Image 1: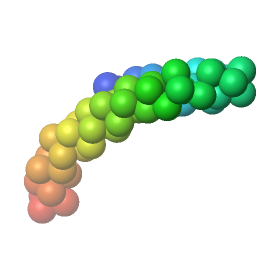
Image 2: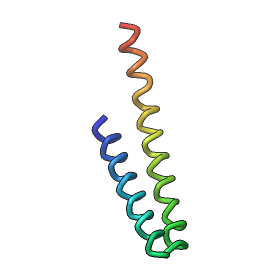
Image 3: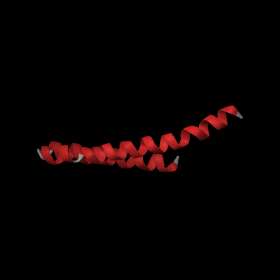
Length: 61
């Protein structure tokens, strides 16, 4: 769970950085950085998928 929180914070930070680039008219750089957000989102999704079986076991108990 801690890793999910860390990844989420990292993704939010990346989003803020990209927004700042966009506002400074560095639009192409900001768009190029969207791949980082996508990669971070995929990692968060994978972490949730790892948690899912454990949650089902907890509910069954």
